[in-house]
Length: 485
Image (cartoon, rainbow, N blue to C red; front, side, top):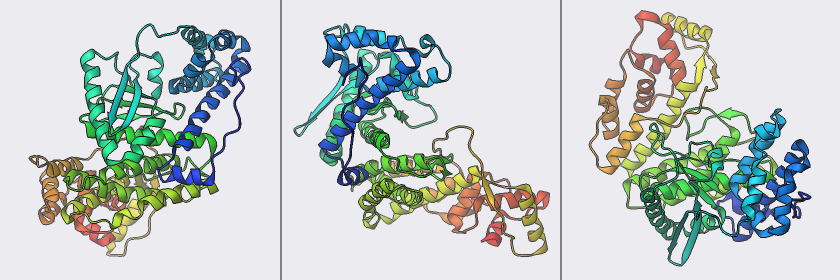
């Protein structure tokens, strides 16, 4: 490998056994070492393409640095954030930006850094050891490239903030090493750096990875160590899958939109696969907390979501079929494991509720179809078949649900404050909940709640469209639901 010639190393391969191990979320050290080699090769290929557009002179300083300090130069090129920069730079060049506008000057800055034996300012590290298993990753709060992971990074951390991160990391690592040690071992080899980002007031916590930055995780300061443990597992899985996708196409139609149990907006098939893969290890983590009501709720909810999402992926390449089959083989036994009936009711209800609300938000009945339904109702006829059309959401929408928040509060033993219908539903008083939801002024949340507690099988978007088309003389919404059912 040389920067001067921008020459990649040997071809990269993964055996069938390695692909199956990756699909099950259990890659071994050799597989993860290969993915890391893949990262460096990809970065060198991006450099070659940058040089082809910007001119080979852009690499002069970097090539000289590599000849003088090959190990330090290679280490800098191997960093995940360099991959994110290189992908952005190449995209800008191809879109017509000048080398200066695209940021090609960063290569000279990188060369200068490679000549310095030790960084002028010591890097912050997150380190932890538990039961003989150690981890050390950079806490990347100063690198100017850290904004390229898609979220707004925090300013450089104060000593107090860095200490809070370290304390949470230490406890999170204890949980991971004790409860899901094989997954913790994966993190020691897959996780390179953590980028602290600003919190999102609309979300409980926020995190992200970049398809071009294998090993980097952007995450807001966690509410507690368990949240950090889950966030690291979740985002590391996204990152590993991104690295697999450098080598294999897993989906024949990755952009086909559909339902995702983790988002309120439609997601492409690639996003659904990412969600199932990320929640595989999250579910495995919650599975190890049998005495904690909230953990059992999370386990029961996500085990079903992972199975249903993975099973919905049918347009797979041969490699994709092997990968998804391995994922399903790992998780399919879990739904048979017992969960307290009260917790199971809330978990299954949360999944059903999300699907109902997703349909109301994203599936739309055309006006002609709604009018036909209204005419059939007035004539006392059977409802005609109508087709709802999927509307692409204008922006990403993370899950937001007052009923879900109330379920969490109930399982934590906290007071319940919310609408009469939601409080009654969470407490298990479905009669009171149905009376509260079945109001003429019901919104999408009430429509979903009414269908949730009534057990009716009417399509929610069709019921709501029929109700709206009937005008001022609308009947009881539950009557329409029963008619459609």
